[in-house]
Length: 157
Image (spheres, rainbow, N blue to C red):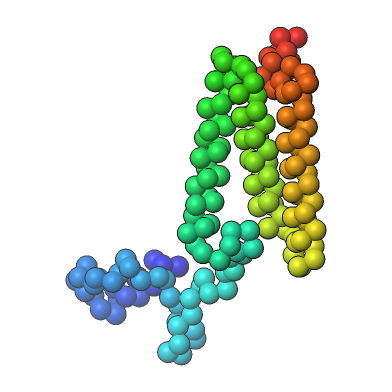
């Protein structure tokens, strides 16, 4: 689409004008709506939900950064847990896995659950599920062999 618009620009004003036009790369692609002077932006109807991230764009950016940091941290925790199993690693894995699952399912709920009452019920259910998951993993770490040794036992058989 942008190529068609730029081709029309070249045909009307010439190739030299195209090279010297300073706003060529800074402007969004706009399409004239049928011979009218009013311009239509193709992205005007895109809606971004801010139900999960609050009202500021900085909050959403920090949340995105925290999600990616936790994902990379989980990748690093695998080898560390294998070579250095222990209670600190078990509880760290319990917290990181629960938070990773909570954020992931929260994004699914944001995308697919609509309506005020349904959203509130879904968020309450997710919070309950995450609480039970974390409690269960901590109970398993305290009363059994722990996450690291349980995975090592699975691999040994």
